[in-house]
Length: 163
Image (cartoon, rainbow, N blue to C red; front, side, top):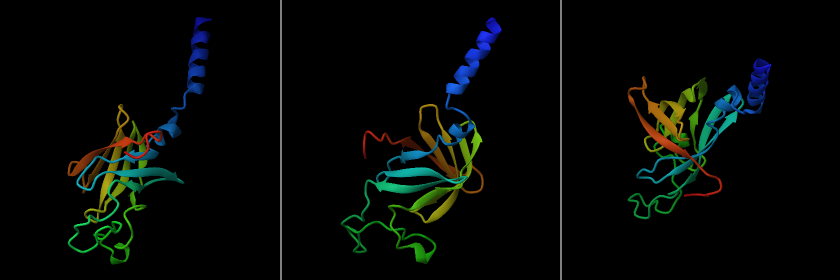
């Protein structure tokens, strides 16, 4: 009797828990705030398109070129002017796709992704890990993960609005 009661309780908890493999794989989805740098902060919206996980810039704290720009572009929207493909250099940073290809590997980790840095015009291999405190550790690297840089992203609270 005790055994069947424990089994029933375990089944009920399992049925009520949304933390199945699909929910774990989708835990990265949503809007994330990047760590501040010389260009301010950005909001990155990560979404699933079929089997692919992609992310694009949906908000910038500094969306326009500074007024004192030596190139005379002050006040204009920032563009992807460092892109190695000249045909893409006029696209605006706002709306720019920057992460793609993540595959969930378990243990709150996504690998085999790519991240584009519009500041340098370079694309890096990328992996991400959802930490217990809810932050997303994003690591871009060349070749092996040891040769890279990590940054922390924080999930945007939709109730709080833009920071």
